[in-house]
Image (cartoon, rainbow, N blue to C red; front, side, top):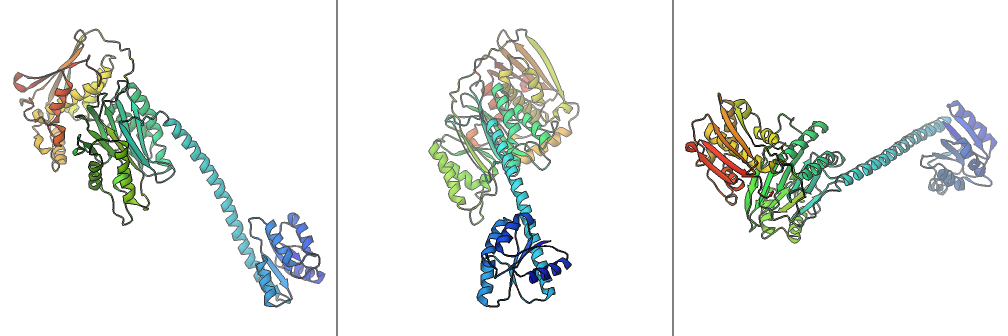
Length: 560
C-alpha cells in the first residue's frame, strides 16, 4: 500500500517511515500541506497520515483539498496530533479526516488503524470499479434499446390504426411493450387487425413484434386469408422464440362492407361481439394454442366466420386488462370488464365511449402498479370506405373438373380444407376469393363430417358441453375406418363460377336439418354452418335425398 506521510518534524517522518515499511508498505514523506498537494498526482497515495499543526498549510486546510483530488475513490486520512482537546478531534473529522492517532502511540495501534482503513479503501475501490462497469453496461444497454426502439418504429411505420372504425389503446409496464396491435387495409377494401400478447414484458417480448409486423403488412397487402397469416406468424415465431416464450394472438379480417369477419383466436381472452344496442351477442373463444408453440405439422389454422348486422362491434383485449388489480389486489376479471363494455358501448364505438372504458380501467387500478402490459381494441363493424386497389387479374379461361377424395387419414389432418383451398388459390382468378372459398369448403366439410359421418348432435355445443363435444368428435375421428369423402369441383370460366358437390360413402343424410340455422345474436354455439354457406354462396341445394350438397359460388360477386 502506498502511504503519504505529511509531517513537518523529521523525527516523526523517520519513525513513521520505519514502522510502515516494516509493515510492508511503501512510504513517501512531505513536510507540509503545500508540498503534499504537489506530490499527490505523482505519488497517487492510497492512505495519508496527516499532521495537524504545520507551517505554510496545516492539516485542517490540507485535508479537504486532498479529498477533492482523490475523486470518487475513498482516500483514508488519519490525523496525527499531540493535541487531545475534544474540539480539535471534532475538527479533524469535520474537515474530512477519517480517524486520528494521538502522539505518542503504540506501533500495534498504528498497524491496526492502517490495516482497517486499507480494507475500507479496497472496498470503496471495488465499488467504484463496479459502478464504472455498471455505468458502461447501462450506457451500452441504453444504446441497444435505442437501436431496438428505432427498429420497432420503422417496422411499425406502416401500421394503420387511425381509421374511424378502429380504436386502440396500449399501456406498457416498462419502456417496451410486450403487447402489439397491428392494422392494415387489404387490397379489396377489407381490413385486417392483429392483437398479440408476448410472454412477459419489456425488451425481449417487444422484439417479437418485428417478424410478425413484417409478415402481417406484406400478407395484408396481398389480401391473404387470416388462416394463412396465422400459419405464417406461427412458423416464424416457432423458429425464433425460445422455448419459454410464445405469443397469444387474435387475427381478424373485416370485409369491405363490414358485414363479415373471419377470426383466428389463439390463447387470447374471449373477444366480445356486441349487437347494435351494445348487448353481448357472442364470445369468440380461443380455439387454438398461442403462436410459436406448435410446429408446422401440429398447427391448426382453422377460422371462425361471422356474418354481422349493421352497428355491431368487436372488442378484443389482452389478459393484462382483466388481470389488472386495484390497491386491494382485486382483479378486474372478465365478467366485470364485459359489463363495463356493454355499459359504455351501448350505441357505437366513438372516441368518447372508448376513452370512457380506458378511464374506467384507470380508475379501478388507481395507483396500483400493473403486473402486465395491457391492450384494448374496438372494431366498429361498418363499411370501411377503403378503395379497393386496381388489380389486373388474369383469368384462367380453360374450364376444369377435379375430384378430391379424402379418407380417414386425411380427415385426421388438422385442417385438410386449408391445403385444398391453397391449391385452388394458385389460380389468379381464384386467389382474391380465397377467404370465401375456404369458408364454403370448410363449413360444408365440417357439417358433413360431424353430422353425416360422425353422427354428432349440434345441441351439445352449449357453454357446458362445448369442450366435451370436440373431445367426442376427435374420439370418433380416431375410430373411423374405410371412410371416403368426395369433393367434385367444377370451374366454369364462361359463367365465371366455381361449383362443387360434397358427398361421402356414409349412408346418413346431412341436409341441414340436424344443423339448425340460427342468427348470431342468439349467441348459439351451434347451427351457424349452413347459415354461413347460404350467405356466401349463390346457390345451395341438397340432392339425392339429402346425401349430396351442391354449392355454387360466383366469381363476379364483389370482393367484400
